[in-house]
Length: 496
Image 1 (cartoon, helix red, strand yellow):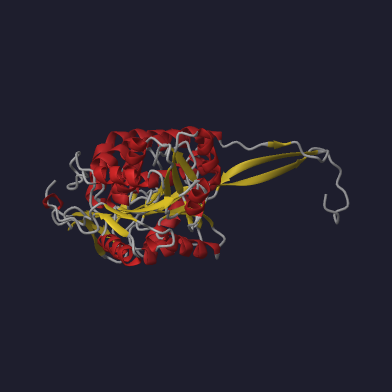
Image 2 (cartoon, helix red, strand yellow):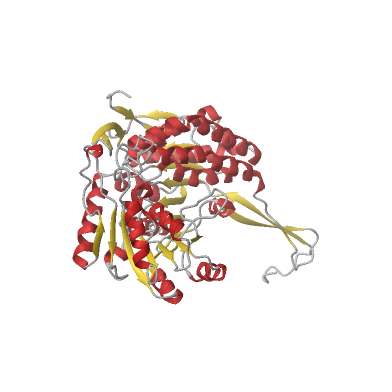
């Protein structure tokens, strides 16, 4: 690709449009540390145009006239187009967020499954006939779409998490205004070019780019938005929830995590080491489900830590476009500085630095925002490094005595998104899956997700569920219909 700086506009009512403000902001390539694109800087006027376009499409456009089966067919066509464009979209994501091409290409080849799955589910959102206790009445329920959905997505896996939100929303019959992260907007704007080719009417999906204070807040506040779905930090999620609650909007939040990855003394240590490495250093630790707390049984602690260090030291860092690179840069400059600050905090709290702990100085890392894979031992669960989400390649190793101790440490957190358990004892596996307070528990694996399985958090990790049948219920409301089939009209002042 040449050095020409790309320019991306908003996408509103089926057309690309310049920002109302006339302003643009820079998007950086994290590997090179250079500007590679200019993105439209949105404001409340842009949001209003997009929301009104979505509302019109929902209320009386051709989208509103489609049957559920016809909506499903459009989603399946979209899935086929994403499959066709997967390699190109993956390259845009890598250029924008610095994650490995191997990971982004894998994600983009998997993303079509969300559109196929929800395309098939669109005409299977069934109501029920209630065997009502009152003679002379027929009662049934129907599930109706909420309306305009504001979908606010993060910078770590932009298109996969976009699919998690819009596929069930569109299957339900809603329309969408997307607000991607200001750090990684380009792939979303490339993606929406496919909607016209797939046959979606104008206004069904819109994109307004910009900053949270200007675009995100205006979306959440807009009176025609009926539902807000947000993925990001718990601090921002709290503000979104409070703001939406003032207007009685539906909300689903997928927020942070401080996930425990628990290794018992009977575990297959080689598998568990690979799982621990994958859990924290894959995606450079920039995932909400990162296994950032590694809990090791005291009997295998030293042996496991030695094996872990041996593998972690072999990590190949460098250009994320190279398929043999294993650890890429941190996506944003502010996040890079945040990760380094947490490393200093851990040192000051008394954790023992076993590996890394500094910016990468390797020649292959160039001018990018790289942090060496970092491992701290002798961590106490009350330390900030064990309680707060770092969102980077930093692992906190904590020793435990027995099952009860592991559960106590695992649950001693404001978060509850994911957890890993490594054991050969099937009874222990089931007990831990019941006792750990998190939305997902992986046993002898880590970071597995599917369009078919619900995903979401306990406690500060969020509200609602994405993926699976559960997700489509987040975008519908239930109506109860009563039909008098012959009951006599009684005293009007007495409720029947």
